[in-house]
Length: 94
Image (cartoon, rainbow, N blue to C red; front, top):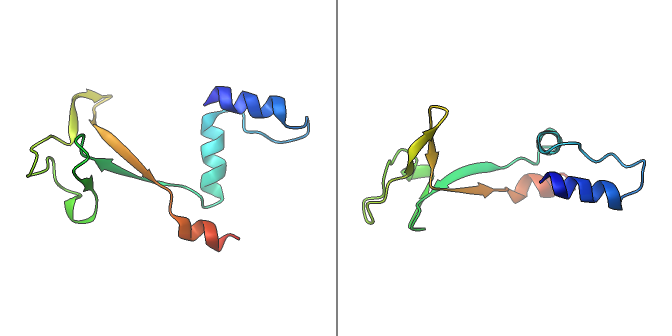
């Protein structure tokens, strides 16, 4: 991601305000109301753990666990994560 930001700094004019880090770019998008929602997904692409399935730890049909076996800093890590960018707030900003 840093390489992409550096590319934009090189391509755009000197007085343009390109974020210096990935964190800064996420902050700008969030401040504009253009954030995203993270939704865990089954590693076999069977299900999204969302709405009715939000509290499931594994999917009954395939039996695959929602989480990887190792933890990262004491938190469980999902096998796959879908990032949903809702279109309604983006259209409302036009």
